[in-house]
Image 1 (spheres, rainbow, N blue to C red):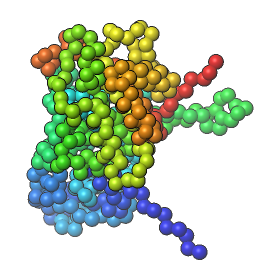
Image 2: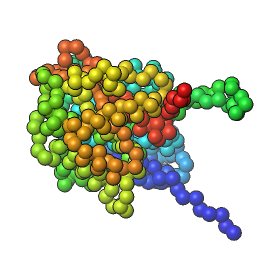
Image 3: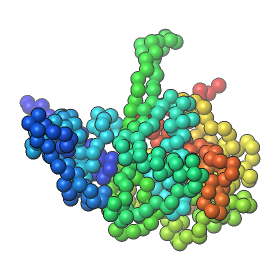
Image 4: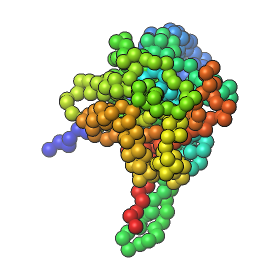
Length: 411
């Protein structure tokens, strides 16, 4: 009896979110002269420009199964530049050889998505990276240049809040592609330890993951022109992080501390409950009825506006966990605290909706800046003092097997 044919593992492009088998990866000419002196010149690439804007590119051609280098059929020079067959964007160096996790980051207008993403990556690179024995860096030249030159510089050096994210329609006409990062963490386990052994041989290894963030604008969740890309983005995601602003809830605005800068009153479409429903519709589009299986982190931003009303014993006033992993008990305590606050801010409709539509979700409360910004869109004079910004992201990675979970033993 002939053996069964093993299905091809399908990869997800971290730039256009199309899926394809490994053998379809293509190559781009390096532009270097071959041994015979021949050399390719850049020319318009219609496929690339349709996704990321105009710009001449070197020729793209098909490679071969399992290959990581190929010879250009035009100039015969060797190249190791691999590109996505659907959008022709250059793929990260280790694409296809390490896990690629797409974490979808969505939210309404003025919910703080771009500020949150900037502070999250900064924290993972610095303070939290040391605690977790991990590191994060741009997986491509454009991500490294854009994040350091635009995101970090503007927020951390100039103390200026970031501009509102442009819509997907603008993206199609020349805006930058998604930000793609490499995340690496050191893991330790005991080799050969059994029930009768307390000590085994410690072994350490580096676990690497590719992360793609598409900072979609709040308007993109309503615009008909952008539904297709956002649906593909969310459906290709391994996990979803949705940011909801309690200051956009009528009861939340009433309970905020005096002096808190309130977002511009929006339409019904900006209401956190409406945003959650639209995201869920995109996740469930084209699928059989049932609960969404992807883990969902429901993040309530700008928590600093409510600290004065919380008791010192509140789980949301604790120092951040210091363990090298996700503190499960601490996370459950925070979840319960946010759930109680949510019923004050919005009744029970968000909680009921999540219970009926998601298999795995958890609440988080964060403050990316630590204090309300000034009226002229600048960081508070106290500086940036982030609180628990890494918690939801690390919990999602723990659900995907990239970060360890720490469970306290009952005593």
